[in-house]
Length: 193
Image (cartoon, rainbow, N blue to C red; front, side):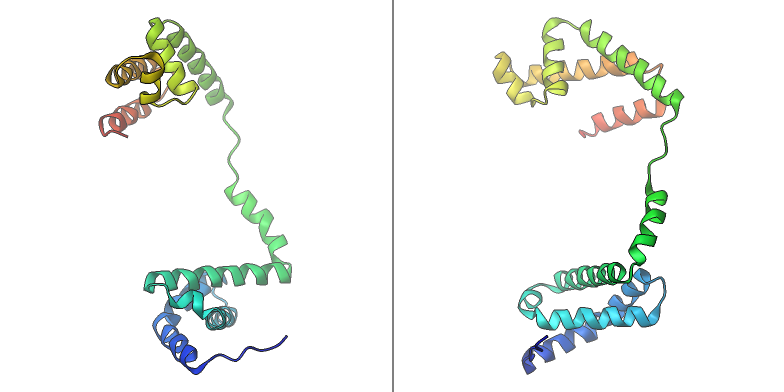
């Protein structure tokens, strides 16, 4: 591999970056390497060498952007080291077990099915215009303004129908859901979320 010569001005700028960011990057690398100081130091050195070789990309960034570039490059070098060493293959099953979703509780699944059936019954019992607006909005994904144009009614009327439909659905599934979820949904609605 041919070595590139780094201009003195670039070397000086990278040295300034090193003085400013080395301690932060060393802490970051130490976390990645689970406290292996020697491996963390190698990662930091490799990261600053990459910064010197790609200085045109790093130089134009602000301080936060340079810090983010250094962290991303350090993390990528760590992943490359894991892949080369074969440790990633041993690490993946552990990570998969740690972050996999738990199996759904059969009782929760049954309650959710009953609540969903109740939602469909509630929608079917709505006045025709409200039912159509509810289906267009939640099932088809249309916005209030698109529904207003489609049905030739005011957008405020569409929003009112959606609000009434939402409240009817909340009341119809209240016996099946945790009251805290309903209160949270009401609070989100009042906050405009």
